[in-house]
Structures are given as structure tokens and as C-alpha cells.
Length: 108
Image (cartoon, rainbow, N blue to C red; front, side):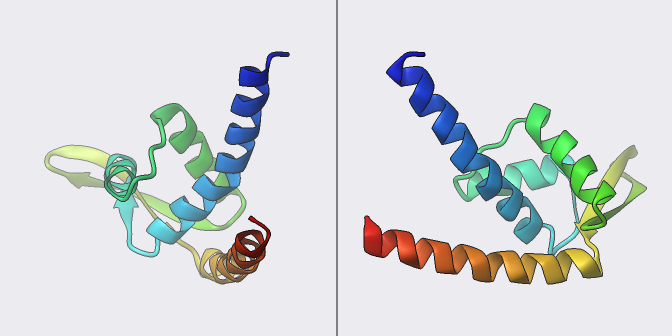
């Protein structure tokens, strides 16, 4: 495995947890998938559809999100938001993230 491959694998590993945290935090306000993806992108966090939609389904199956189909602009769209369990989990993850981040800042 080349050095570039190693870097890319580590980069993806680092991003995976960060993206989950970003998605959960962004769904404190209800959004459909495209609006969520756009909001994340505007804040500098890119996520492609091939990663976002499976993540949304996984988080919903874990009980962290709830969703419902509604019509908007004459199209049916699935709207997602944090469940009560998701809000509690997000708060715990944010505390964990802040602790890890503070520690890494001191190390780096």
C-alpha cells in the first residue's frame, strides 16, 4: 500500500465520525436530505449523496433520527430531525468531541 493510500484511508476514517457528528448537529432543525447536504456544504463540510442517505437511514434505524414524507414544491421529500434519544446522544457526543479536540490541540 502506497503512502497516498495510507493517508487517504486515515483521512476517510477521521472524516467518518466527524460527518456523523455534523449530520446529527445539523438535524436539530428539520431538513430534507438535499437541504441538509447544501447546509453542510455551505459550512465547509462536503458529503456526497452516496454517503449521506445511507447514513441517514442508519441513524434512523438506531433511533437517533425520525423522518416523515411530506410534499414540498409539488414533490415528496423525506424530512429528518433528531429524536429525543438523538438529541441526548448528540449532547454526549459533543462533550466527547470537545474533550478529544482539546486534548489533540494540546498534543499537536
